[in-house]
Image 1 (tube, rainbow, N blue to C red):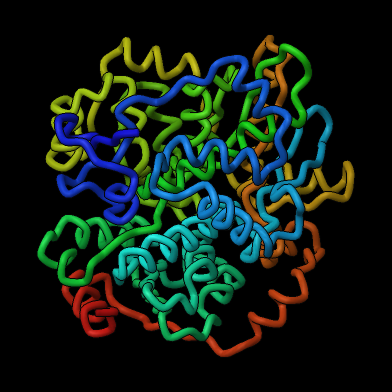
Image 2: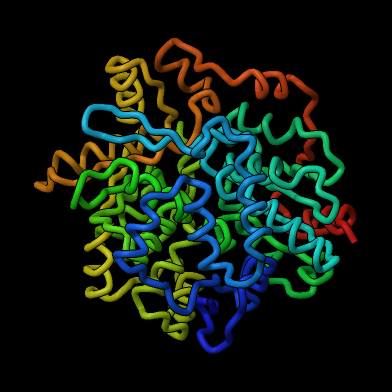
Length: 466
């Protein structure tokens, strides 16, 4: 398995390069040179596996010989032992729609599923190579908590997490900031998530700084995150699909990493008929599907804050795929984005993207309505992001003839992470698991900093592991 950068298809990398670097040195994102297509026999074999064994089979395709069979099995086993579901995910049903509950890990969000694996991958690789790494990541709420839980107290790692001050839920913040570990540093940036993401990208693009701290990243720009998330698309389809039916997956979408994992599953041969980009009022990607123009605008803060994003980093990977990994074309589009503030794709490219992708933008009013109606239907409480996903799926179902598909919505977070919002809608507090509710009463540790690259770099340099 060889990897290339979206902005340079000549040079190839192995999995360790892509994993430890996070972002390619030319500013591009790592992608496989070729995405393997699975045979019908292989799909049939995979369909009989439990979650951990399926994860092993899929992850080993992309990690190649980085880990021995024993090492990879151990990584997966250790990663999922703290989950409250034996098969990592659980399923529930609302009317005709299957909900995939992805929040049964230690920080109650889908990010745990990949992040726990990544934490154990780092530990295995760094112990073998006697290396030390400083992780720098931006979070819109859930990535940071999941990353901190995955790497806290690990001796060869330090993690610096930038979150937008006052723009994540109180519970999201406290799950991150109450971790008292010498290798964890929380930074509350006076700005938006896009500002945090821009700061992290600037650090990655500064080769001298990057080398000076031996920097790596765990945002969804890290290819390993995508690889691990592919698994639950396969698992859900195998568990719940009816014979010969294709599946539709609705995905609450911000940085485009989770839904891009679904796209890779589709390219590998999973029978998917549609991937639904479910957005809130930050409808950059919904507009793109309308007119082929990718044009970030000002972030609108909403009741689904993890999706308050106007720069969907992983989208570059998708565009690269549709331009047949033409790195010159991708570099040109990214330069246009920087110089003009937007880029436009060819009409035939947009048409091809729309063959598999559908989009829907759900406003706060409809998000609240959906939370209310689902609770009235079967006492199930949705978090606001999952509500966006379910409403988008319902709209797709009502506006399309294909009634013979399996309909899935990814439920990305436990409702208690957004308890304040849920209470305002239902006048009911979703229950936090006891362990989490105990932890978030502890003292918080974080530093408030201005949206200033030089100051944040200096803080990281002062506190780095070396």
